[in-house]
Length: 198
Image (cartoon, rainbow, N blue to C red; front, side, top):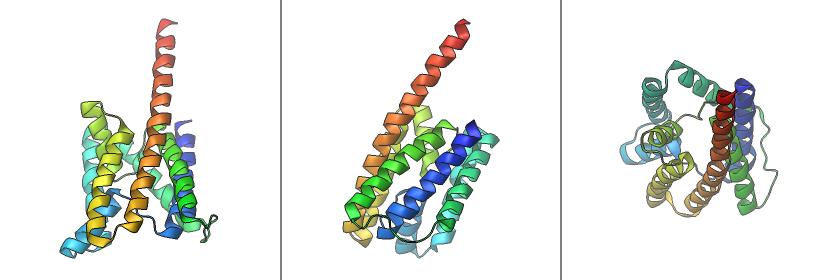
């Protein structure tokens, strides 16, 4: 069941980005956003910056959550990338704000499914999960704060129009994560308590 959820969530996340966000070049935060900043500030190639950041964050994830967590995250990232590559190009919605809204809602729900399966989409998700574990703050709130900071820095360097869309997408998708992921966590706690009393 866990791996079925992981596959479903990964495919849905990839489709959300490819069909609704990428056609309008709506930026994401995370490690990809940091790699854009590194390129603009220091000339570090995007691929190199993205690889180094993800490698460092996966190492951190391994030390805190163990090998299975890293394995599931690698599987999630691979399935998302495969979905993005296989889906045809072309936006199903031709209105930018509507496409961004639908993409954000779908991505937030898919992120909740991925988290429910014990995985992440890599990048800053790992850092947000670490903050949640250490200080007890909500995962979605942590991720929104991290990505908003990255997007604001990108806006100062690159331009504000799509960056504001990016922040709006982050806000909406992370609201979905806080709603659905916390609800699922509450359900799991209740079920575990019932099992303990049997």
